Image 1: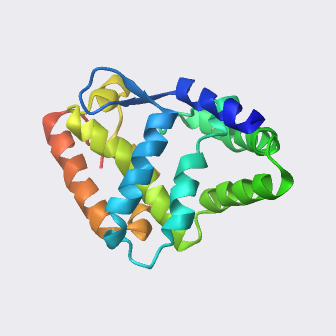
Image 2: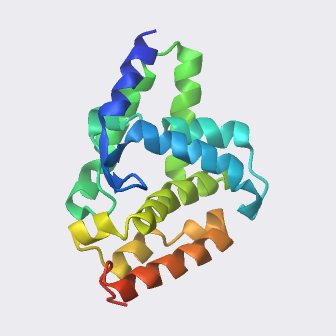
Amino acid sequence: MDFILEVDKVKNIMRQTYLADGNRKENDAEHSWHLALMAVLLKEYAPEEVDLSKVIPMVLIHDLVEIDAGDTYAYDDDGAKTKRAREKKGADRIFGLLPEDQGKWLYDLWEEFEAYETPEAKYAHMLDNSQPLFLNDATDGISWVEHGVKKSQIYKRNSRTGEGAPKIWEYMQELIDKHVEKGHVIGDI
């Protein structure tokens, strides 16, 4: 019960990405739910067989560490320098609230996501990277414009996204180019 009540706090972690209607920014719980649904719907695009019984809990728990660590914006280079240490500390505490077997299972699943090596982790990362891009597309790039995001930053962040779903990455590139042409993304490459 301590864990269940603690993770309710993820609803208060606000992200920089707006909802598709552009009325407000999403929170981590909404983001994770969206990824879980996308995992089911986009599975056919994964280049390798992925186990949804791993992917869905992986995307549901991947941001729980932000209860302690806070959300590090995708293009925040300074925040990225301390992100791993902050998130590891959060993972230790939050997953430590569970009985040992459950805590170890979720901690290991979080580490698998972070390692980006298994087909499930690659697919989960594709979901995690594509969802904000899809929402930016739906809102005419509002958060990209707010933050002065460059095409090179988006490509750097997504350097491995194609490993999780090459066709989705191709579609993402089309969307990025569209927003460069519209002036929502700075075309520096």
